Length: 205
Figure 1 (cartoon, rainbow, N blue to C red):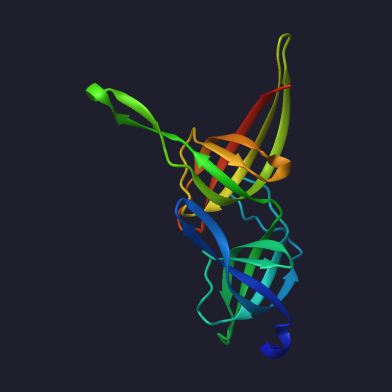
Figure 2: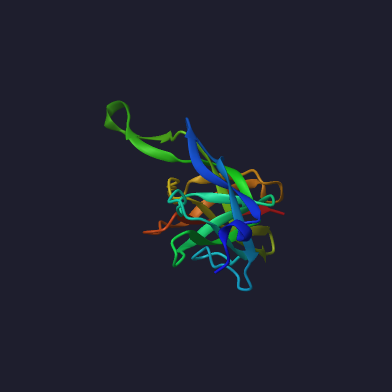
């Protein structure tokens, strides 16, 4: 087995999710020596979206890294999907997906409260801003005699802390996909580091 001092010839940023007020963001926690090797097989990091290119990141095993963190390497955002501890317990091999579209997102929604005279009243919830991974985008085109519409649908992968409801509106700020989308389905996955949401956007053309 190769010695760690010669194997770890690269560096990755280890990121932790931080919350300030109603905003979540990935912030650098530390810089770590690592070995980064691109995988031959794609990483199926989403249960409903498309797969991504994957890498294996080998780092020193110090007990500080877990699946609820992320990494940045060579300007690319890496979402960890599995961690394997080496036989000598001196290193960990982290399987991670290279995520091309990572964007600040803002979610808004409504809840129902009892208002004057105990009548149900719709109230807007406090907007929440968070980093989202966008994948699985596809497009369709529908036309009738009086109407044409272009529909865009995609999958949004969020940190586990982000829990959205069907019908919530999500504003994606990434330039190519910039728009307001509607949450159609949600996948609150047990035992993993993320939630997934199917979003749809429709506009007249």
